[in-house]
Image (cartoon, rainbow, N blue to C red; front, side, top):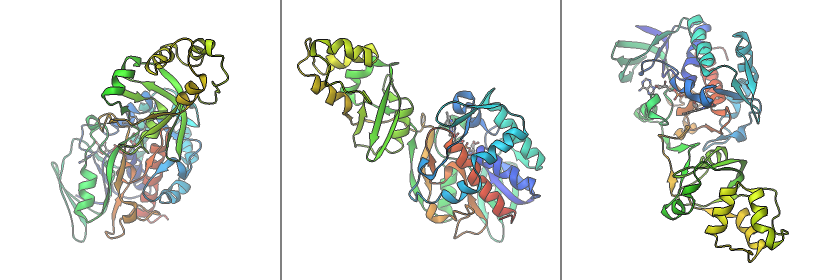
Length: 381
Ligand code: FDA
């Protein structure tokens, strides 16, 4: 079969790009290797899909080239996606920090994308394995259901996070096959683990959560942190994990905005239990060796504002919400997502070295990069 465009991967980016190109009159096939598209969408945002953020800025994205995402993000904004949500009458709400979620369920978002694909007459091929991709005058995709050809190939196969949702390194392999470089993929938005000593110190706090400022280098996040059986999680940790480099320390301020140094020493224990969750306060005083009356509230103040922790590692791709790194942005046009050296070959979404913060930014990147590619494919830009 011959198409104008073949899209590889039926996640957020692939579905949106296929729908847009189809809506603009192109004959589009989408190939998904798992039994149904959009599986990750259904588990996103705790089942309600944090589908965008009201305040999207380039600083919310990590990339070897921090300027790369600007153009696509400026041309397809959260408001554009909201227009679509309204057109499909999908109710949504802002939870916090500009994060927009579906009121009912992430299924609404997937239904929107599938409805748009139907309207664009996109041929959806699920449970279809890709066995080879070659190119002469056209791209030829060999699959478990036969050969497909197109002048344009869009790679939207995502990253390595959560293999059970269909994640694979296919997009990176394909990029390498065409001679493109890859920024080394790494787990991002991921819980961090303790080494043995910290595990013994803090492991029993599993389930305790507290507000912190988590800092690495110049980047900091003021959000909740959660102690787990194996380490730390919660929004503050997931956010800072994307910036963390193995072996380096994180600074955690456990008492943000609080001056504990003026507390009366005989009150210290009681006051700390009021400012921190009680289990954390007690464990912390015990670990630090502070007995009653405490020797120095100044020391407590300093230690709590500057907990320097070197995580042993991360929970890896099995638990990472996204994959950092990916197809190097130096290889792609920031206007169209097309590979500079391979006309007709596009990379969109998470497979590209653009990684958003927690809070709807990764879906916004999926929409914006998909839109940029669809416009280019259809000659609409
Ligand atoms: P995505 O990974 O979604 O899709 C890739 C598709 O390609 C998959 O369907 C896969 O099966 C398919 N594929 C892979 N290899 C293939 C092959 N060889 N052949 C054919 N098909 C292949 N972001 C956000 O903004 N808000 C949120 O609320 C959340 N929540 C969230 C929760 C959880 C648990 C996770 C794991 C992730 C999130 N995210 C998120 C991140 C967000 O889901 C992610 O960034 C986007 O889904 C990326 O979209 P893509 O389409 O690029 O990849």
